[in-house]
Image (cartoon, rainbow, N blue to C red; front, side, top):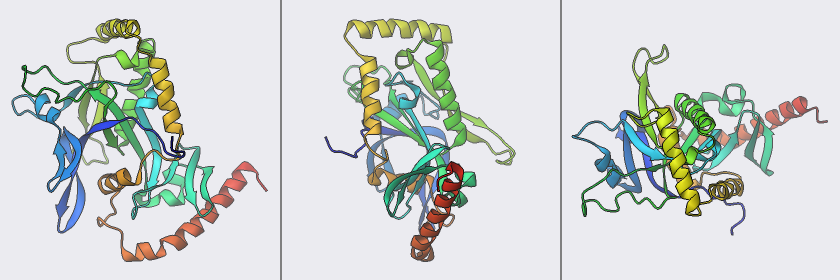
Length: 313
């Protein structure tokens, strides 16, 4: 195996609630009020829609709920969340932290440093560092007529659709739901029938305009108790077939830990474009020219702060 390369869940598609559009010659993110399922292929008009997108839509209605199952029994393996700062010019992760410690690319290599959260970090100002979450789920294909759309789901039991977000509401809600579902089901998180649901709310910051976030619930018409009973039956069926959920979780845990950063440069470029745009849509030449000098100054300042906090000489 290659060393220093994180193994992340296999991705066969994307779940998004927005898109990147071109305006006045610039590519800018645009929010939406429904889900879109896409493949991993981009065309001239953006990401190509996955066959499941059409299969899940009913009579042209907006797609605001998706039947899903989780791959792993541990919440933190299904939902990966961290404060993340990308290098805008390359798409590479530059600094990834959890609010206490971070891994940062410096002149000396990748170092572990204090993480004061974006609000208190000089590097995280002006929206350059954000909470960044990735939820991996299996999308359950609806029943189709024989021969019509067969194989549209591409469900091999381990392939996932990834939902990426920098929205605090989505990350906080999903993290809470995963923890609660694991607790009430006795650890049968990967066997629970669930629904990824889009919700809207208004806040003072949004000036009464609806903002949308993602939630995870039991399917419509199914109570939590019924979902737990079904999860127990599915869990027992899997055990009889020899399915080892514990071993799968351990393999995923080791895979995540194998690399310093989970996002590759190729994926990071698309993430930066959609979730980390500059105010004017692109980095200026002045920003590029002064970046190395600024980074060095901030690096020295942060290191001095870390030494004072830890008491190092």
